[in-house]
Length: 88
Image (cartoon, rainbow, N blue to C red; front, top):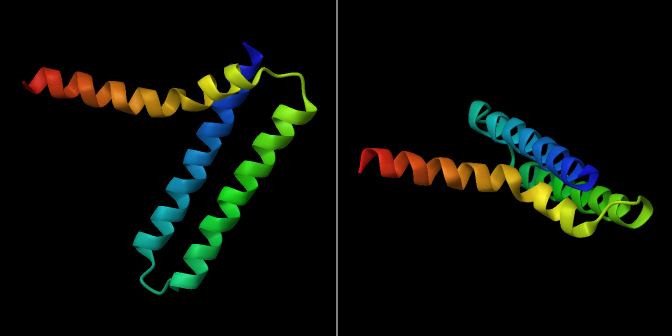
C-alpha cells in the first residue's frame, strides 16, 4: 500500500514538473534547444535517481511502486476510452 502511494506521488510530481517545463517552452519563444534538452535530461536523471534510491534504500515493494507510478497514466488512458465511448 505504501509502495503504491509513493509511486503515485513520484509520478504525480514528475508530471507536474513536465507540465511546468512545457508551459515554459510554449510561453517563452526565446528558449534554446540545448537548454530545453538539458533541462529534460536533468529531470529524467533526477527521476531515475530518486526512484532507484526509494526502491533500494527503503522498504517498498518494487511491484507496488511501479503499479502506483503507472496509475496517472492509466487514468488518462481510461478517461480517453470512456470519453470516446460516450461520443460513439
